[in-house]
Image (cartoon, rainbow, N blue to C red; front, side, top):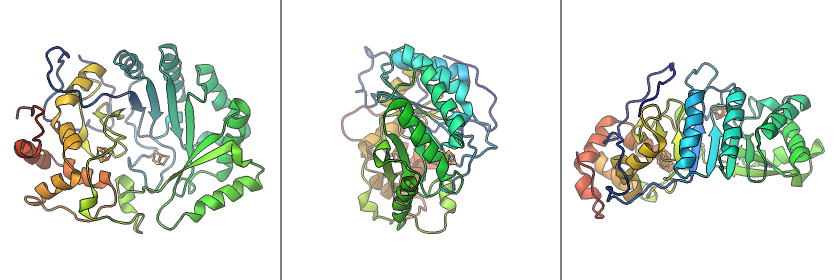
Length: 358
Ligand code: SF4
Ligand code: SF4
């Protein structure tokens, strides 16, 4: 299946997946489906109107890489037919594409997605009026909490760019409109827990009641993307033995270039995780490919530490890591690493599941 890709400001990544996706029906596919996702996430663009220091995607205002609106709408339809019931929308900053987003939500609700989740930096909460306008736009599109969810990131690195009063305006308006607490994603680095207390104190001083919002703390601040430039230590490093099989595989995340990754995909630089492009394949073709994709099979069968140990025998790799994704990037970002893993696949993937042909 082929679709016209929009013009992109950067070349789409070269997929390091071993097999190109091919349409295989369940009848002739003996390989167990190791990738059976319920949740489809669309990352609309890498464009963002702020520039958080820790941003894994390195998003900024100049980045023009964005998904084509028509393809996104088709993908939402194909995703529902393939069995997805939850839809996620993010960016970059998704609300820079508010009209496309409203069309996506409207369609998703009409064709039976059970929930839609959106994450934002909350820039649109600058005034009470702009906040109401955005919440009305969502409501008109069919967005209805608690099934559907909107959250705002407002932690350590976002606060350098977005006023705390935006969070105040959004919490207040969201509670009035939906009668439910608003979710704040609050990231903070090592030894900065006090920022949460200060945030709560600020909201209390503005008359925001505790039960009108909830904080989702996020303490994983990895050295990925722009985060690599942060000089101070953001997390404790862990011994290699601590890195097992990634527990986050099984999602279907479409990156702004159009390629699909099997996890949060926050790190856009792990191109080796690509399962295929939505401009070349349908959603169901990519799901099928995921079952036999070598990279995906490694991720679901072999602890990250074992892949790292194997590659260390032949390549010079760093040794200090704090989170799985840092290790994953080192393992899969280079084509020669994936080629080497392909060569030793028989030794490492010995669980009886057919190994894709080299
Ligand atoms: S972390 Fe989110 S809000 Fe911050 S620059 Fe990246 S995409 Fe934008
Ligand atoms: S470790 Fe790899 S597969 Fe797992 S969430 Fe991180 S980037 Fe994705």
